[in-house]
Length: 534
Image (cartoon, rainbow, N blue to C red):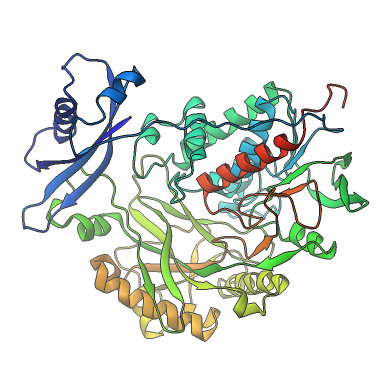
């Protein structure tokens, strides 16, 4: 694939996307009829000199990779990339039992897929229901029904990322990202994720991709047991030999633990067994909602609203007093704030958007960092801190899963008011006015105020006093890490592979999926597939 960069076009261009592709093909010396797949990888606006200019990067893929290599030096603005291959060896000794994968979020899904594609017939345990039933449970809760602790935005087929913007961005640069992208494409994801600089699927389209991958796992001999929660481990001679679940006990000598960042009962079980857990940094704060049109006016200035422009996105950060960082996270253009609780008596917010990103509001987490120093490096205290914040938010919202909310102008002045204007909150269970600063330790509230003030200097939309803050956002990432060695096995329990975001080794759909692939490959390098009668 080629990336042809710095194609600059005026806003007056009648069809700038098509013109950008035409110029990119010309740069490579391709005739008008030459077959090639093309797409817009990046579009930005250069408004530094008054009149905005559209700046495109175009992706072009030829049918013949050999010909691509020959054209690699066509221009200084042309970058040539080749999809890396994913190779690993397999062990010689067959497993005594089918490998078990716990959790069917991105990490577990891709671990199970790789195992299934190589004949290991994994047994997958998922505490929540299949996706169709999970969506029904989420919709019922959003409409005012009871919370199901095992079927919600955190738990069930697809994991927490199912109800998100479906972002596939990552900073890792790992070669396995291409494997994940290709698998998503094979199961119906939009073609543009292959070349966009900031690819996203959207929660609506992501659902079909997830169920398609699960169907492939099952077609290759894997078994998925829904509504089956891990409750314990069996060990013999310091080695894993079985798992205990709500659906019975299973012999097991290899297990990939990919439970996600909200499986607090699983964390407690691991802690009770004496497995090595440590605190890791995470963040807490609110969801900030602005008009999407105001975000785009802040980013694109006079070009805002032009049909050639993508939905405006942003990422902001500010180091504040006390050595902490306040930053935006999981920004959802044209999206909505969702009710993400997984424990009774707690309120948790998150954000999601459809593939079209055509909602009236933009939302993003605005959070401040915390780490082991805040909890005496005690993982149990870190989890308890999250839970206490969620319970405080529940009470402040009226103890009926409404969320506490405050407008930005009020929060910055500590007035505890919800002075609604153009921005109407989208949290589905309703919001209640609240002094959000009172729900957090004073140091964290002060840090968030300092960060929001700095964001206002960087982006005009953040100066709007009627922007809405809805709380609390507490599940940015896992508060702990289950230690593993170079072989990716738990340092205290051979046969157990801590994996993904819940175990503290990923953050987001792409990195979790990549870690699932790594753990599955590490397992396969140790052992051959189990016998068909195992």
